[in-house]
Image 1 (tube, helix red, strand yellow):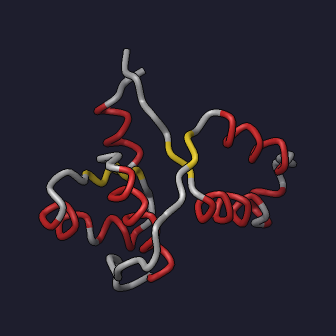
Image 2 (tube, helix red, strand yellow; image 1 turned 45 degrees about the vertical axis):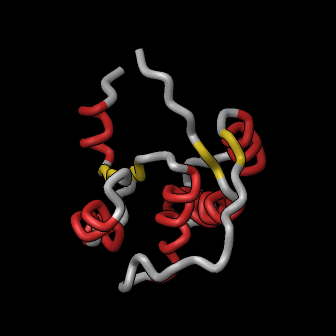
Length: 112
């Protein structure tokens, strides 16, 4: 069994909240305040230090995710975002401790 610490920042909470308000997610009738409360209960909160560098050229709104991973020394970013995955090789070469995984790769690395 693995022990995994999951970090959460205000920027990620904001994005999580925004995604839960998308029309195609709303059809599932998610109790958004309850979901955010649960997320906060199972994660460790971290405040990102600004300014943030430009890590993701094609989508500057994703820069905080890379900064977040580097500042927490978490080692991993799990994402399905095409802009982040497109920069995977470049970022992993630049930051040797950083590994960017899609969901399938994460599940292979940490099987339940």
